[in-house]
Image 1 (tube, one colour):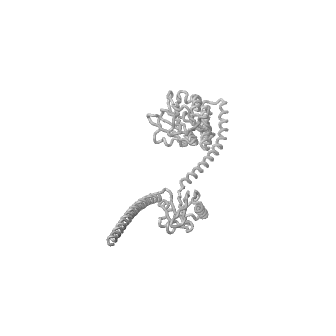
Image 2: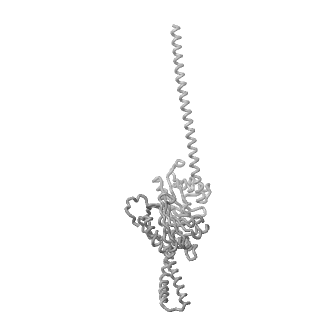
Image 3: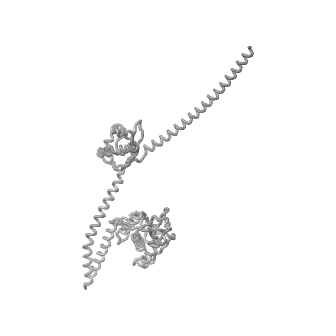
Length: 403
């Protein structure tokens, strides 16, 4: 009986030992899982802190003013450094005493409507809101906004970009357009009496005049014709460059123009060499305007060199893909480095008898074609005027040149 009892106790003890070992193993596994979870939690927390620091850095150093707004409470809840500079309040003032209605008193209805639209749709954009600074100055702004949760409430995150310079540029452009229209009107008014004067001077050529009077007449006619050309160039510069575009194969256009260019009086003893490294190059442009560009550049180049010197006209790949470069090179008198950036400015010229409008018009035409004009002048390469134009791709279906 005693042996049976001892055997039972031993077996029970062994069973308890096995259960204890099993529970110990389970606890160890649980501890391992907990440690892994803790590590993952710590890693996640580190990542979140890193991202929060990055977002905070973006927030603080953004070039745009950033606000967190509570439209219902008429409060600014958060603002970055750019916002402080934008409105010229301190950050403490923005968050404690400045109200949204104080920043937009003149456009409050528009601001409320915009905020409601953002809250309803989740996002929004406008470029018609201006902010009033602490000094009372109105700063035009472009606003991009979205909805965020902040302190348990739905708020508006607004990114405000100062567009003062853009507005000033638009106003300056409008002013230039007005000046251009005024210049065109003045030119029209001057050309009419000038035509009458020219008719009168031409009629005097039929008379027998003393040599001194004849010399004065020729000088007057020469100056009147020069004034007529100047007025025409002013009118051409003042008008917007309206293009009649078509597909143009530049090699074909240039070869066709080369013959007439070589017949110009200034090019009679100054050969023009045309070189193209492209078998075919197509652009979308106005053929008459581009001819005007080439004629002007090549005439300038011929005027800059001595009789017997050569002007080189090149077509080659552009500096960027899908571009072509057209350049005119001469080895005449170099342009001083300090004057390079002024070339192309109206009425600035390095030529004794020029007015600077020719190259200014060229620049206008090139820009209207979405191109760029570059000028270099050094002893090794001479003076090179280069034009970069965008090319037309995928024109294999064009069977023959249109221009």
